[in-house]
Length: 293
Image 1 (tube, rainbow, N blue to C red):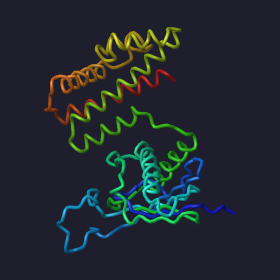
Image 2: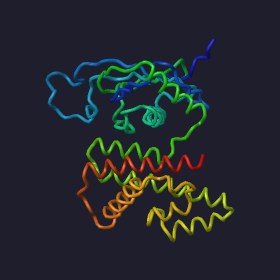
Image 3: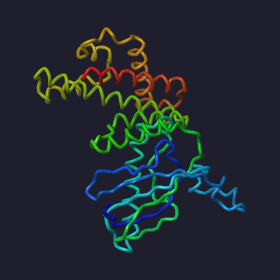
Image 4: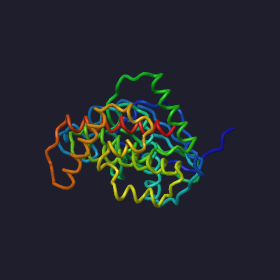
């Protein structure tokens, strides 16, 4: 028989996680916390009919559908410490969303939530409990097998304490900015992600060649990660000649645009430039990551 959890928290969130099933995800923490999401269709608007045209922060995500979120945890809160419970809830939800974005296609628009996003928040502590929240969006037809696979991927990543690397998060952000037509931000995030991976790659190569970490960092500082990416990679990539010239040229162009944004205040960036930057930075990152395997 399962032991009853200590705390129940209920609330509502402003979007829908379509691509997970209704299982409990064990979060593998000291509080034996677990979470599940149940998708439900909602009315076209959670405002009253008379106030439809009033702009409200809680409607910023749309409200065609939401996911009820249920969190069961042994963590306890004082009855008057609702803020602490809200903070815990947001931490748990946002950590899950980070993994969800990584494994779920077309979910890059889901950004971390803040306390103003919580609906109908309530808590009962030191009793059988769960956190229940609503997330809005719009019911969409989904593939049950895909949902199951995404759910398995998320659960495995939690069980293995897998960290979503910063460069992965930056690429997701870049895609989100592309979706929002924030092309400058998209290019900045894509190139920073590439720089992080190039830096890690160089440090690994130095380690294999028994060169000190100090010398490796000095090389990175003096030469720069992407000052001339073709020369930098030619020095370290074993199968450099197998990298397509287009990939290198597009990444070099992306770095130039990034430098113009940062150092010269360039503001006009096109959709094509941002899209090429994301696509080719991703491709070069994949090449470098496969080199380390």
